Image 1 (tube, rainbow, N blue to C red):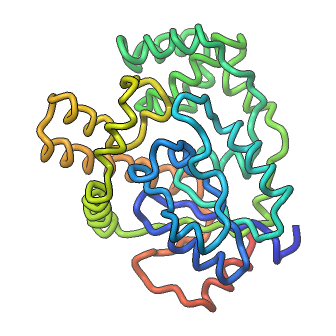
Image 2: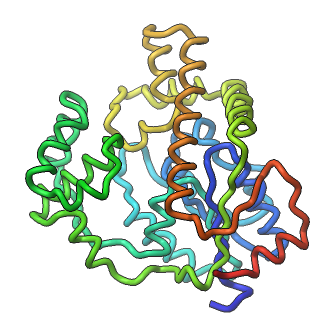
Length: 307
């Protein structure tokens, strides 16, 4: 791609101001905004996942927001194929924005062509996670796939379950699949790469304030609608931060103040995990402090620098 059409990637933790920055860049560079957040793809979470509202979406073309149903399987592979379709058809400068580090890794480093996990193996994995916990996966991986286990965060049940499922479904470890990864969709040397890196206390205050705004704008009704046909905590869409706590309130398991307090705490923990990922995987990306003013000239320089 030429410099004028080369993608701009914006990663950052939840509530760090990614959407506002993306809109500024879209206005400056005639861009379109492509979602890279694993929860904003679902059509059931416009409020709780902080999707851009209708006013924001009217200011620039937006892609891959709220286009997937709550029960529809959707992986990094699905997302990558959707991004490829947008890149092939848009005449705007792509601005790819989100907080899901795995999506950016798949985009810039490639993604192994791992087959879909059969439903029966996925059900077995869900059963282990819910009834035994992460140690059930760790024990099996220690015996059958120690190479992959050594690369995983052993405090992340979802990643452990994924490795366990891939091994059971394919007979080949996740680390082996990754070693056979094809070239990336986007060459990281030909795009501007930005990560928002703020003071922890500044971000925590924004998280508190934003969750209060979510409650004011109908987050509880959104959760109530989501559980109309029941609550399945194993669904990827059910991982929306704050959903479990508000479901617990609606089920009379928590009072509302406690549910909100717990949801805010979970959001801060999520932001901490995101920041850890970005420090580890995106150390060479351009760092922007969203708490500080960035001029249009600075944005021009940032968006024109590839490294």
